[in-house]
Image (tube, rainbow, N blue to C red; front, top):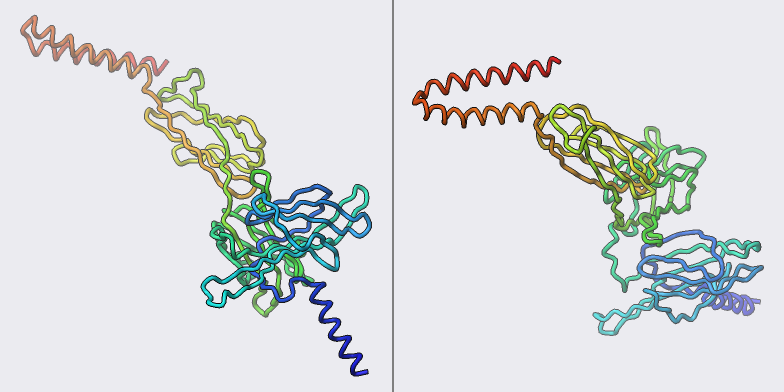
Length: 384
């Protein structure tokens, strides 16, 4: 019996090695986690240039035949299938060139597990886990595999103006809200211990994981409640500037004069703009939310002559803020211009009269009288 028991234990160990290819492999920071339904011939972009292609799906088991690519080049692997009890795992062997013995270390890079199959139409839900490849550049990652804690009611500050807030801690679940520049970009309710919280954004048709964390545990004390996270990673955001144009014109003509108003129009070309603010010389004159593409207008109050500045700030659904600036000039009124021209003409005539009559004082008297007439005329126009 002892001999049989020993054999069975040994056999289990051997089988576990074959069933779990990642046995003994190092695991770096998790940089991607998703549960996604796929169909045959679907292609999914992952992180660090990796991607997968679904070649075939077992209609009953959901077993999936997968091809792996790096920068669009197919990788020759010794694993082709993802099964529920035997995930597809890609392990990369890294040789330490600085070690005299050229030490080799195996790193688990990708693990794919089928977790649900749908027959009509045929598709399979894959759980995809990706870990940092030490052989590839990782400069874009700002936080890698850290442990963090969040006190209920106090946001956790992350990189690049991101914050993570925990709320509604009850029944061993919590609500997690990720924000950027104060604008929520991802909220998930009833997150439990062991759940992954991830935020991705699509850029040029490809999803990019910006933030990932695993809920570890809770602590409910007398005066505070705290949520503990592990496997926290964040990569640099990919900012997509919003396309917007500003046009400015007067109410009745293209020229805006002193005492007139301006019509400020702005055209939004992005579909995911959630908020717009318009400032004129530092003061807000327009604010809108939930905009679609199109042109919007706002009217200013009366303006004084001089240079003015319009600042248009857009906030995308991912919290990205973009600023567009345009300056314009308000010209002096026609009446003021006419008065200025008359005074200048009078000054020229004054010199001529003074020379002809030889009476310098006479020109000054004429000038004063004409200025008086001009201002009386201007006042009458304003009163009317």
